[in-house]
Image (cartoon, rainbow, N blue to C red):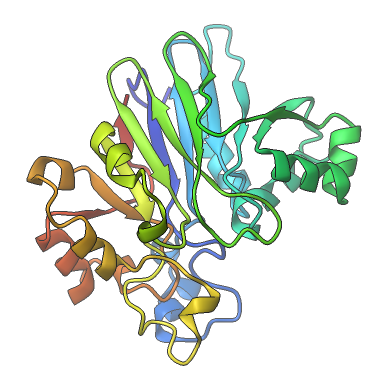
Length: 292
């Protein structure tokens, strides 16, 4: 066991789908990360751990799945020394959130009936398209249906509730999750188009003890000439203003995650990073643990 965590949420990655460095990027934002491992960031992913039972789950299967699964596994040994990886919850069908399932395929782990929790369109996507279809047929994975705002009981101490959020749903719907333990709740929304079209955000933020939300871009200027309407996300600048009236105690547990490789908040020395911190908010970091 890596530490004395009983049950909680672990940050296994904080970057947007392509991670840092980003494939094909020769800009200054990725230049150092090609050479220095300490500057690299894995794709956004959470782990859920119950060390009392040795059980663990992941939210999303990213391109960095093998590293994230290995990190999570350090918490999962039962008294008999065996690991109990109980499954994966998928938020949606964009490449950084489900393609890590390939590591469960017969050519890699050849997993046996790993539960994968999916919303209806995500379920159809995986059952109707190769190579995911073959993984379902071989029972490397077993798809478990989720419904909007219907809680899934993981065990007597932890349950997870999915809720639909507005996002670019070309292939599947998109959900966020509320993870509830015996004492605390963690809100996770890695992707959303806009807070303006999500009526329940204030209620969810109010209920949560830890908040991790979409921080893909710091500002609308970040992508240069590219039209932000093609990749809508609430910028961190927008979110700082949107949630500025929250009490200091709530801001202190409010983290931005899913940062694009261009986001200056990946650099703790940047003015933008310090603006977030000075506003009372935080940037999520890999390896952070939130007890629940």
